[in-house]
Length: 225
Image (cartoon, rainbow, N blue to C red):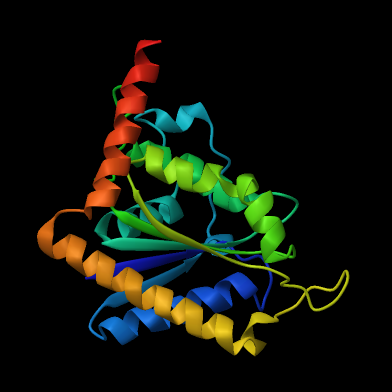
């Protein structure tokens, strides 16, 4: 079984990447035989996406093919990202746009092709958790919704707030939060268990099947408008 971590952290060290590493540790606690891979998006060279990328003659470069292959062979994917200025870093959005090249059908670019592949999201930000629950979560809704549109299954999300070394100061702080570390490891372990069950049975849990059915029905209705 393979699980891929896509990390959109921009700093070094990065709070988002640190939590992604703890998440992967949790995956290994569930099953040490799981093959885990981590790709830092900032290390990729991806040109800005344009509609020309949908053309058969477009070659987006070796880093695109590397990410595409990693996504397609993975049984589950975690995306870890900071939240800067009310959104995710531009390189993550650019990657999501490129995902449409194989995450959507070639004929209509409206049918998801990821086949229910499980995804989990880790977000870090400077806002406190209550602000995230009340308003800030809406600033990142486009990320999981894009994955849902591509046919992925949203297994869960986690937000770690107050990721600042001080007012106006940026730096690694989550390494000093044992409760956060334990929580993220446990979420990684549970995600691995979810992916194992999905890979073994080929079926999602009833609730996720219900959500997917409602989403697809909504798509059909919108398509007729």
